[in-house]
Length: 165
Image 1 (cartoon, rainbow, N blue to C red):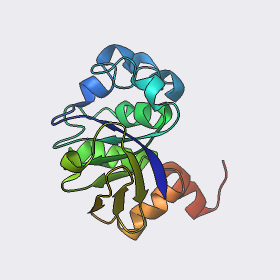
Image 2: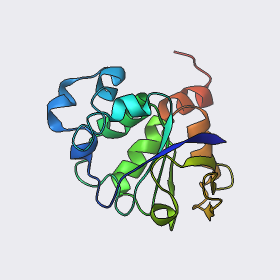
Image 3: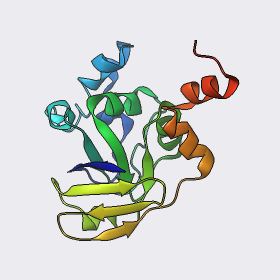
């Protein structure tokens, strides 16, 4: 189960606002996190630090294929991203780095900024504790759940082949 307050964004949130280009020079994930959502909300890292759930509308993560965008979100304190739809490459990059992302129809109209959410990744259930709404997200396949449980694809592969390097 994932618990957290919602931070809400709209349609077409692209990777250029999730992590603007000038910050791509950084390789440390914690440095990237300091600039998460800098294109929309410079205070986002402070808001996310205690652990939040990002809620988007349609086409979240569109734009360039920079994997630094989901890394910045994850290390800023984002526990999960819920959206009506995702750009394909952002979705894949998020799973690869161990950031849960769920397609959830109706989420942008049933969640307000600051609402308390509980996300059951195993079953795809999203509960808004603030207003009582219960939504069904697309359930993640078992192999994706394994990748997320292991903390991302690299950690999953290392575990699968039995190395701790």
